[in-house]
Figure 1 (tube, rainbow, N blue to C red):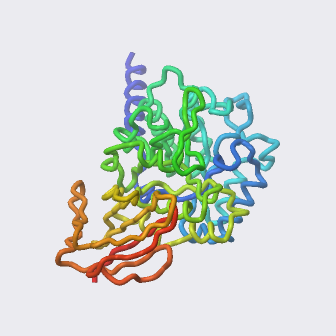
Figure 2: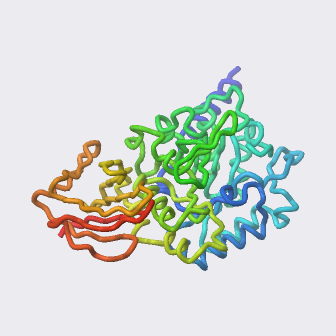
Figure 3: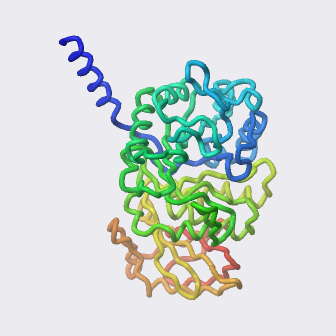
Length: 402
């Protein structure tokens, strides 16, 4: 009896020690690339290596994009006799550990995908019942990021399922960013900070400006559908825990103006910046947009405050976001189907964030205006701001105290 009592106490203590997530990860929103938006399950070793090379050669890595994440489709259809996951031997003949080593050799981090259910969304082996075994496999391969989906999860409790995987990742001793992907169905913003570093707030994104495509029991959503979907969840975002608006569609059949607006809004909303385009063949204008360090700095600001809609007049949406050192980001988005002549009088607006008790005090403080996409100064807040904003384009400014 004493032997069993001691064993039980050991197990309880061990589980108690595991019941936490790794601290200090994703103190700013994670940045990287994911295979799903462009390639779905059509991925292999050569493609991943080409993407890794392109992330370096295009300047994306140096702009801050570091995680290269393989989404669904990398797995073999069956586990080994010992129950271990392996990569598809035809797609990844060198093995997943060797692939991780290649990614790391480029100064990047290795991300991978699985699912809380019995099978992934595409029908490959899921993690249910293998959480600790799979987490150790990922750690052995040098994985730095796990996207954990929610297909085929009949009768599972979402919070409990993600907690189990959180504990499994922690038990490996390897710092692995945990990306919760249950599509916002179970309000993960209310419990996600205990489990991981980011959580999806919607179903899958699709490359359209403002649309919804139904797929029977679920839908995919355009950029503005996702932006407008969740109310009052900005209070849950902050260093180490982020509302995830999904992988970006920048470079996927949008106009250059829409690409700028898309990136600007993900930055204003402190969403992870995970690219989903084919970066090997992107246009130079798309590359310039994605590597714009002044815009990215708004997303990576150390305060970690998620911005919010301040005004919506004449189909011009105005969003603001407090930044470190008393700076502010302000973004004007033209939702019209024609160009708009902006005339914004700073003295008529009190810029402030009541939730975080941050205020600009424009009535007695003057701020310099920096145009972040055009990399130029536009005067200061002592005079009204006048500018032409194109169709679905954006004027994104940083307000800097004089």
